[in-house]
Length: 230
Image 1 (spheres, one colour):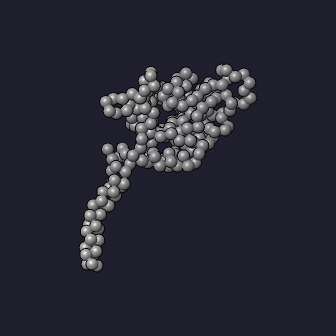
Image 2 (cartoon, one colour):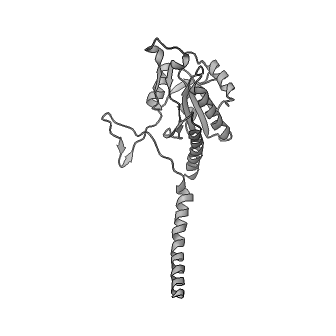
Image 3 (cartoon, helix red, strand yellow):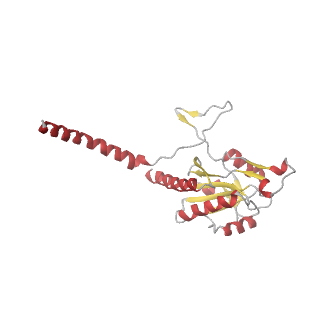
């Protein structure tokens, strides 16, 4: 009886090995690195747009602004790059310093990776000139070419935020004359967005929440691995 049980055990072990290897390959092989696409395109009726059996996902549209050195910046600057985007303004004393500190950490982690950049858009372009943005960039030790700070036409910036990155933004001074501080003037999101090399949104994170920032850093690495495996 013992001999029969031993043979059965050996047979089960032999059969289990291929299964174990298959699981390992699935977990640690090429299929390990996955990151979802976010923001499916919607038609005028609110239905998800499909191309055959596949969902059509939103891409950041082309735009042109001005960076902290007064140079033209367009979507061509980040074409073929993985980038992290946010919206802020230099006079903000509440969430913006937290966002910028978080992005400073992202810059530090990926300082040697030329395929990863950061793009911060000012929602207060009337005040945030290129010179003001340059001083702000120096405050956070932002490296030009790695971390861009953008200003320009207000309508363009707000359209890019709302229609491009799908983030809320507003100038409260346009409809509320009881504003008591500059921090109440501009309404913008605390979110950081991870954008892939084709302009698709691959992650959304709370830039004021450390665990979310760490998740962003991890998922930038995942996205980098996805491109390496292609």
